[in-house]
Image (cartoon, rainbow, N blue to C red; front, side):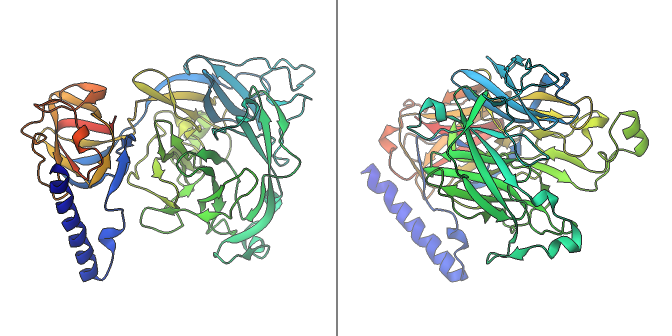
Length: 521
């Protein structure tokens, strides 16, 4: 009887929305799926995927808290041009890869907080192999093109791979950096049927390693070849998608070979098998087109390890020509010539595969340059790829600071688990109502934080918005406190299994509180 009472209003709601869309001459109300099949997945409030309406509440961006410096460029072979690349948690050990003067360096940790630079004995520098430089067992660098002899390192999570294939590095063989610029440059390129510029071909070369230190080439042919202008320049993201069941790459490209008018943007390609890739497809940004508001220097897109259906992206926003320091301030801070003409920071975007749209709910800086003149220069405050747990309540990111100076270092930044953004309510209170959804499980678990005076209550509704008997707001037990996993309960208990598989809405009534994520289990 309960099932019939819930499903009939839902069907009436579907008919109403369809009629509204038809009357308006546009399917705008139907752009998103009417029903979210949530199952037992964790969902973050980093976008409007679950949200139907907010009343007196808002989606709030939370900024990571700076913690300790974990790496300094203090070895002779690292030089002054240093910046981070990747952090991976693999087999209980944290692995970090960073660039020191375009050489790939390795650090490791048992907790993600205290890091060491092991002597790998692979690459000879000034007559010694006592360094942390990554290369082949034969003592060779993993070369990209001549000006950047450093690979990009990733963890391949595709099921069924042998342990020797889990760590993969990609290098480039290409020539676009040697091309001229400006009007002369534009004559060197053609436009494909997508309206994208094509330039010099790029071969992507795969390498694998058992331990992440010594590498060997995988096969004798490139992973793929691409000639979209500027593709793969800088950094790019590679991963196996659990939800798409295929490999995905997000890469930077240029929207025009004339860099005075073009922007650094992001494109995506996919592969069901490691050596069978699609063409690049440009990403879009919010409701806009394929050209971002600002240059996106790197994208760092990857599935969130607790919710792999959500791809978090931490692009480096490069503000070309935005000079914050005076020449005198830059000189006094020891900033090399020309590096104070731009400024940069890390922002947060999300996307859900498959698809070519980034959600741009949050346009504010996610990790700001912060204090110190040497952080208000070009190509610094760039995050490393990877979000990892470093405690039962915290996750960590790592950020390159003071890049391109003698003071460059990598710093750890900390968030609460799932704490990128939240549904936030002020002291006067407000509410959030989800779109209709189905779930599996017996309990509704919240990641939430309130003030001493604050609270959270939950009502389960029919798709038409009527309270389900026994799960109304009046039945809801008040939640007060700060917990990563708090089970919602009503006067008759916490068991919601009788509603599993049926379309429902969730209504959250909050007062001076944040709701970061929810899941059924």
